[in-house]
Length: 300
Image 1 (spheres, rainbow, N blue to C red):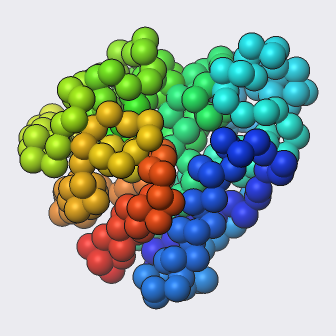
Image 2: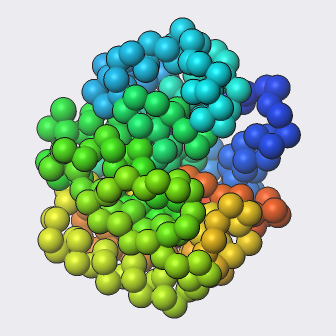
């Protein structure tokens, strides 16, 4: 069965600028249920991530400051969120969601977290709406449990996966691949194992050709036995924070390339939703929903 991590925890009150990105999670869930792509049985509610899983990839001092709510004002501003106990609790549940998705992916081939994709969280600080790094935490768990030997991170958010790159810079068991907008946040990029920086206004044809070429080569070269897919939809031309120009159909074709390749090669995949900031929330929900529809069609 196609299993989806669902974290029904909301952080209130939030300033207006934070409220809009949060809305998409509940709207996406409602849309998938309404159209019959999934049923309630497809969703699972994760618990709280264990400290040992967090500390495998994040520094102890930073994690202690998060738990004690003692980040400095500058550190809080860097995360983009007002700090609260509820926010930290929500973050830990999202981390566990991606971690538990790995078990379902190993069993069924694919699993998805309706949140997650927090690729800007470094080992020792948070930034860009990311406090802890779910892909890194779940990767560390797989490697420690000997459930995977070689992991490929396919990060296709419009923003570089800088935190993930930093965490795994010296870890040969995790290959980080980020295809992102060259001039998008973060201004100072980290070094992934493979970075493909795209010029402003890159459209469907150029983007999809580059992805197909690089992913095919990586699957042959890396031979991963597990893949994490950061499937942010901020690559759309309508996105407020992105600088690329993909159409809704182009974004859907992107997901199809990744999911079909993993299905064909029998590589378990966990997808986290990542970013999406189009002015019209319906566009965001539709783009994210396409990822789930494709997973259902391709795998089941």
